[in-house]
Amino acid sequence: MASTTLVGIDIGSSSVKAGVWRADGYYRAAFRPARMVRPGESAGAEQDPDQIWAAVIECLDEVMDGQDPDAVRGVGLSGHGPSLIAVDGYGRALSNIITWMDQRPLQDARVRELLHQCAGEASGAPESSSVRGSSGAPAPSGPSFEAAAVWLHRKLLENGHDLAREGVMLLQPKDYIGLMLTGSTWIDRSAASCMSWPAGGDPAQSLFPSMVDSWQRAGEVSPVASGETGLPEGTPVAAGGIDAFVEALGAGVIRPGIACDSTGTSSCLAMAAPDGEFSLPTVEHVAPGRRLAVIPVSYSGGALAWAMSMMMPDVFRGQRDWTSPVREAAEGSAPGAAGLTFIPHMTGRRSPSANPRVRGALIGLDPVHTASDVIRSVLEGCAYAMQECVEECMPGEAVAELRAVGSGARHDAWLQMKADILRAPVVRMKVCEGALAGAVVLAGAAAGVFEDVEDGVGAVVRPEAKFEPTQDPEVYAAYSDGAARFRRAEASLETAW
Image (cartoon, rainbow, N blue to C red):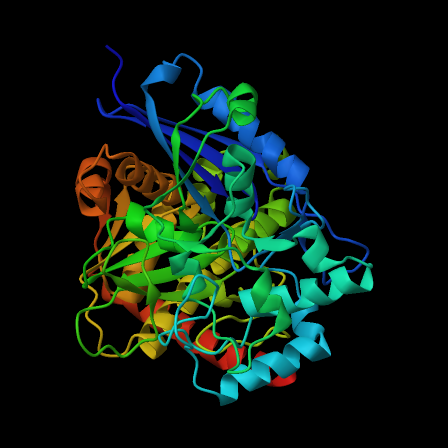
C-alpha cells in the first residue's frame, strides 16, 4: 500500500515550486521560473497568471512522476505577498499579478492618501466575513494589500469594468492557484490580519472574498484541475498563507524563542509572539491560536542573483546551483570584504522603517577589489541589514536560535556569516523549501492526516545542520567594523534618496 502523500505548492517572486512529502520520509521538490513582467514602466513588477499556472502544472507533473496519485490526501498553498490579481466572477484574470515589488501603487496619490489615513487612525473594525483588518496590524507604510487593492480598483474602473456586474474579486497569487484548482475563492485569515483600513473603509475593500483559516479545507480539486494536474479529483486543498508565514511554520516557529530567517528573492524574519504583552506588532499566524511578528528585511536573494550576473555571468547563465561558486567567492575574500560595503535595498528599504525610494549601493570600490570581494560584500550587506532589524525591531526579545529556510539556506558560508554577525546559532532545516514544508503541514491538517498543525510540524519539520558563532576575535572585529560602515552608509543614502 502506498504511503500517505501530501503536496505543497508555493508561488514565489522568482520561482514556482511544488513538493511531495510522504509519511515514509520521502520528499521531492520541483522548480520553474516565475518570470517578471515590466509593463513599459521601470516601476512596474507583474507576473503573468497563465505562465504561473503553467509552471504549477509542470512542477506537479515532475514531482508526481512515479507517485501513486491515489495516495495524495491533501494540497497546501503558499505565495508571495502583499501581491494581488483581479479576477471576474468566472475566474478569468482581469489583470496580471501585481507583486509586492511593484512601485506604482505607492506612487499613486489616492494610495498615499489612504496610507496617510491608516497611519492616523486606530485600525481594527469588528471582524466579519469581509476583510476588516486586525487590531494587531500596523498601518502600512510600504508595499501592502491596501495599496495594491486601491491601485487595482482604480485601474479596473479606468478600463471600463463594471465591478459589481462582473463579480470582480482581488486574490493573492496562491489564492488564484487555489481558484484554478478548486473553482472556489477565499483569503486566509492570516493575510487578512495584515490589513489596516481607515475607519470609513474604502471601495477596494469590498473586492476581497470571504475569510477562512489557513489550515481549513477551503476547497477540493475539481474534475477540470484533476485532468490538468494529475491530482485526484476531490482532494482537499488547504487555504494556506503568505510565504513568509508559511515558511515560519515550515521552520517549526510556533512557540516563542525561535526565529525564522526565510531568504529567497527577499529575506523576512519571523517569530511567534508569547502570550501577554509583546513589543512587536503581530498578525495572525497560520498556526491556530498563535500570533506572528514578521519583519521584511531586504532584497537578499535578488541582490545575490544580480551580483552573480555581474561578477560571474557564465555561472549565472549556465548553472542553477550556485552553492560551490558562492562558497569559493566567500572563501576568496576575508571578513569585511576588503572594505567594501553593500546596501541591499535594491527595491526599496522595508525595515526597520520603510522608504520605497531608497536603492542599493556598493560603496568603497577600489581597483584592487575582486569579484569575490563584491560577492562577499553582498552576502555581508544582507546579513548586516538582518542584524539591524533584530537590534531595532526586536529589542529585548530573546532569540535562542535562527532557523534558516529558502534558497539562501543552501549556502553554508552565508549561514556562518549570519551566525557570526548576529551572534546567535543558525540552524538549516532539512527541507530548505520552508514554504513547501509549511504548506504540507497545512495540507495534512486540512485533510485530517495530522491531528492538528502542531502534530504536522512534529512529523514534517527536521533540522539538518547548525552553525555556531565564531569565537575568533579578529573575525568578530572585522564584522563589527563592517556593520558600523553599513549603518553610516545606509543613513547617508536614505537621506540622499
